Image (cartoon, rainbow, N blue to C red; front, side, top):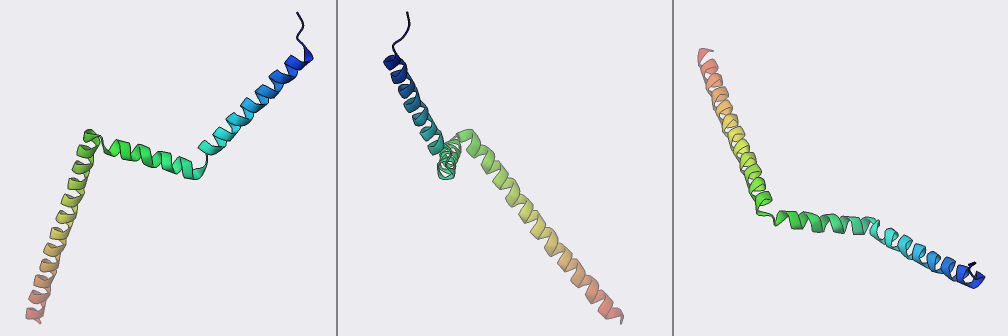
Length: 92
C-alpha cells in the first residue's frame, strides 16, 4: 500500500526536528567550557577514590624525600667547598 504524501512530509519534518535536536545537543556537549567542566567533575570523582589518594600520598612523600635529600647533599657540598677554601687559604 502506497503512503500518502502528507504522511511522508510529516515523517520528513519529524526527522528534521530530531536531527536538529541531536545537532544542538552535540554542539552543547562539545563546547570547550562544557568539556572542561566534565573533565573537572571526573577528576574530582577520581580524587575521592581511596586507592588514588594512597597513590598520590606515596608520590608526594617520594617527592618530599627527594627534595630533602637534594637539600642535604647541597649543604654537604657547600661545607666541603668551604673546607677546601679554608685549607687552600692556609697554604698561601
